[in-house]
Length: 187
Image 1 (cartoon, rainbow, N blue to C red):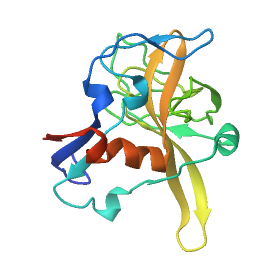
Image 2 (cartoon, rainbow, N blue to C red):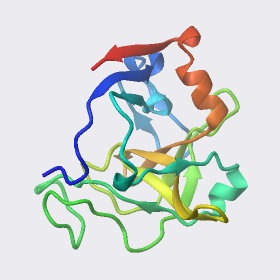
Image 3 (cartoon, rainbow, N blue to C red):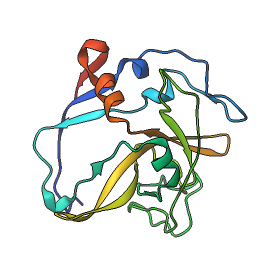
């Protein structure tokens, strides 16, 4: 079923760091994340669709919150959990979008990369299949009312913790600037 239509990805912008194997360990403290290829802070992509998404499908804005704002944000997550045996969350219905009914919080940050905390730990209830799903907050504006704003993208689960790639506008622009090594992959 596709109640809001189907969209074709024409191109995907992927940071070069995700495509280039680095191996090694990211972060510091008690939680270390081994990853190969690439760096978890590069685990993000921009998809260029063949046509605009219909407004009836709903769209999310994004916000690049400062650390103090992100620390106090009440976050939600919505995604498509993988079916058993991967530890599906309570209340999950197969093949349906699912998310916490309780707000999630930021629990901490992995090491800075070039002065930016790109990866944060969060308390959302996720499972396999949630990778790439948004961590968002509801914001109100005078002209548009309540709208969801993405502040991070759930990336992975490791050693008992959930991690997300933080949305930082200037950092993302630099990440996806073709002159600094983003790869354009035709879909």
